[in-house]
Image (cartoon, one colour):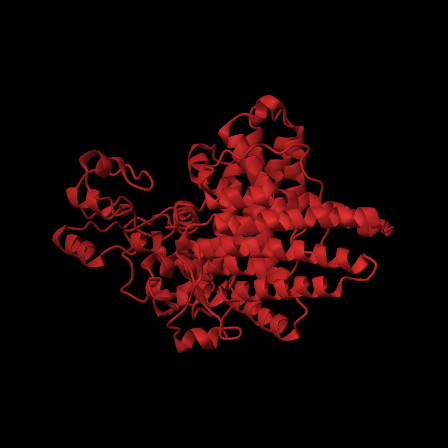
Amino acid sequence: MVYGGKPSTGCQTCRKRRIKCDETRPHCKACVRTGRSCPGYPHPLDVVLRDQVAFHRKKRDTPSTVSTQPSPAPITLNDAFSDSSSNAGTPSGPLLHSPQVPRGLFLSTEDTVTSMFFNSFIYSPRDPLILQGFMDILPDVFFYTQPESPLHVGTLAVSFFSVAAWTGNRAFLQSAEQLFVKALAKTRKALQGDISQNVDDILMAILLLSTYEEFCAMKEGRQPTRTHLRGAVALVNSKSPAQRSSILSLTLEIAVQVQLVKSSKGLAYPTMPSPSAWSVSPEAPQAATSQLWMATSELASLRQAWDQFNYEGVHDIREIHEFLTRAYCLDATLEAWTYALPAHWKPVPATWIPQSVRRAGMYKNRCDCYPDMWVAGTWNFYRDSRIVVQNIIRCCLALLPGGAPEQIQATIDLTYKLALDMCATVPYILGSQTMSAHVGQEKIEYPEADGRRVTPAHHQTASLIGGWVVSSHLANVQLFCRSEELNAWIEEQKERVLRIYTFGRQHV
């Protein structure tokens, strides 16, 4: 049924049967109960731009009543997804280059933005061995949270920032900044009260503030300050054993651990103390991401100890050998992770690369294809971790008498190979994209390999999320690789990501 209100977000099967869809992920209960195939759910952009022909047919056949009274001006699709600073009536992006959306179709801006963020960042199709940590549970927690709570406002801040980056809407970016300040104030106030009953909600709100901080750092071309991550560690340390027993609590603590590992990758900023005790991961043990998180759990403490060792400046031979042993053991654990991966996770060299992809950016003519973008990102998390460990090994070897030149060269060679493998994911993840998706994601081309065709899901997700996945690792490669040519190429790709995420900037 076509109507002039909020469009249906249910699955296509339920819409054809004209029944209410409960929208359970990944398959609705109505389809599962009746043995039907559930096709999944439309992307928010597809939802808001539903079939206008059917709408106009209904409008033509239904008498309309013209009101002479002025009414409030609710947010329309034109207002929500066009640049508020552009000339009135001027379309912006593919959302508006079809006939104008009817004025009768009104959407809540917050509902539209959070729905777009959840469907693009969290509900996007991905390999079943991929887990997103606390982001996987955020939509359900957000649905039950109280409006104006730190968690609610923090989710809105991250959602508005992401959609601002995807669409180039400057009004959304301004809203994100205001929401972040509001979420920060509410979180501080919550921490001053009794947090015994809502400590997990506050911890998730702090993780969202940390996520926002990461996004802003990338936008401004700087290293994140990790202020909120420090607060998350302090909050984990303050929790009682009873407060650490729920699945939600364990999931959030693992999220803090993963963020700490990520903070150990770059040497441009110091590491921070780890929680006094790590929880056992509640995630499915067969998930490749969980196994990698467990394998890298030692990295944060190793980096912290290594920084302290260098700061003291007293290089005792025995301690150097201890660091070398720890680093070699961690490196072996990381390498072993790759042997347990299923065959379809292994990268495959591209057999067809469009010229547009080559022009956008390839290094040494390398391009590998993966099952999906999230698998490629997980591989890069592994490579990034090994590069850090190899750097510690190289520094330890250089401090030993004799210098071990052959072993040092082996670490340099392995670091360069891991860096090349990371660079080879960029053409696959970003394709030919050089500007924001609102310019037209249907024009973006991607490489392919035999048996690895580009899927509609990759077109949908990579054009919005790909830049986040790429940028989180490229900066660290520059810190450890000494190739000027490689570092220059990485700098070009970082600028490319900033062009993709316009943040309201005008294209030139």
